[in-house]
Image 1 (cartoon, rainbow, N blue to C red):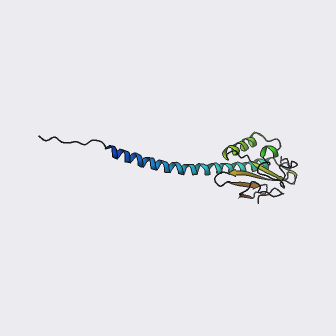
Image 2 (image 1 turned 135 degrees about the horizontal axis):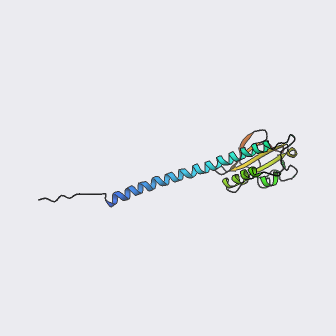
Image 3 (image 1 turned 90 degrees about the vertical axis):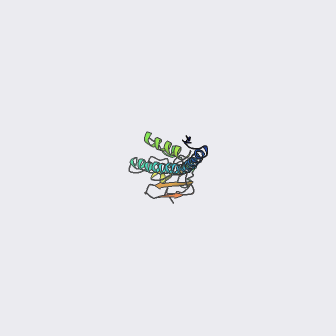
Length: 161
C-alpha cells in the first residue's frame, strides 16, 4: 500500500510573498491618502474664507463693515500676513465668526484668517493659508477671488490682486 503525501496549506515562502505584496500596496494607498487629506484641509480653508465673507456681508450696516480700519495693522496699505489677523481687525465678532476663524486656524496649520480693511471699513479682503500649495486664498468685498504666494495680496482699497 502506497502512502499518499497530502499537501495542505501554503509554504512559508508563499505566505511571505503575499504579505510583502500587501505591504507594498498599503504603503501606496497611504501616500495617496495623505495628498487627499491635505487637499481636503485646503478646501475647508477656502470654505471658511468664503463663509467669513458671507458673515461680513450679513453684518454690513449700510455704511461699513464691523472692521477696525483705523488700526495700522489692518489698513489695506499696510496689510501684512502676520499682523492683519481676524482678532485684531474684526470688531465684536459673534460665536459663528470666532468658530470660522478657529477652524481656519486649525485646518491651515496655525494660520488664522487675515483681513485687510480699506476705506475705513467700507471694503475688505479676507485671506486664508493653503497648505498644499503654500499660497493664500483671497476673496474681497466685491466678490473677486484669487490665490497668491504672499499673504499681502490686497491693495490699499482692500481688493485681492
